Length: 334
Image (cartoon, rainbow, N blue to C red; front, side, top):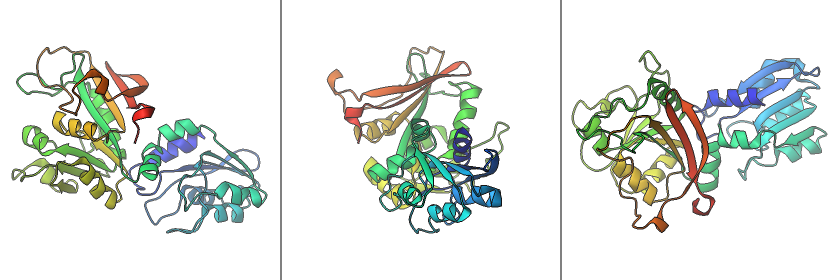
């Protein structure tokens, strides 16, 4: 299953609005016969790719997949039919499909005599490659991760406005890998005016990644000619509004599922006030500044009892920095 999870991670950023799924087909002796991951919309699902790689070795074997095989006709035929045609004897999956149209694959397979087991590494998959898609299915809007880098005293820049580089090279490389996997990167117009970011995914040597996410600039007013976000390195969407709900509705209409919010304190505060931050990814550097802007601007909180509460799900070292992943507390989730 962890091999399937790794394949699903390879598909992230290329499948929306479909889920990034990974699959492994074992032959009757338990040896790996085929690997696969979801292809871009209109292409085959992970199970079909893995079955094609396995060929006749799939007969009597086992399919291991990160999401319950679909049982409906969409852009492609149901994966349950492909598994049955291939003669697979057993299917193991991680997460049950919550999509009303596609659910029920486990029952279809079991009714046909296939041994089916669900729930293997379900939490790991749900917090990993399927996190954004599951949120999208549940809420109808894109999943938003607010990513920022700050000092130990919570500053995102020095008093003179300089901010490069607060986090380490290791953290920056990780963020570029994350950019490669999301559907869109979002900032406010103020960030473009102040920092002129490129908002592209790049390799460690600085070369552009083969696939670039949609760049989203929120706010009224024009951008200066020559701004990096207006070049042809990637597509840029101007969301001429200050309302997070309007931005997310427009992105959902474009099939965007996974959004990385990299804007400054003002935009982050607006999304926090709207309850539209689904995950915080904070890179805390072992640095003190004592002055300068803080990570979060006004977010509708006037007293401690009104604070936006989050639950820490992971704390990890990232080079010399500490990476903290936190999600809204259960009683605050949308």
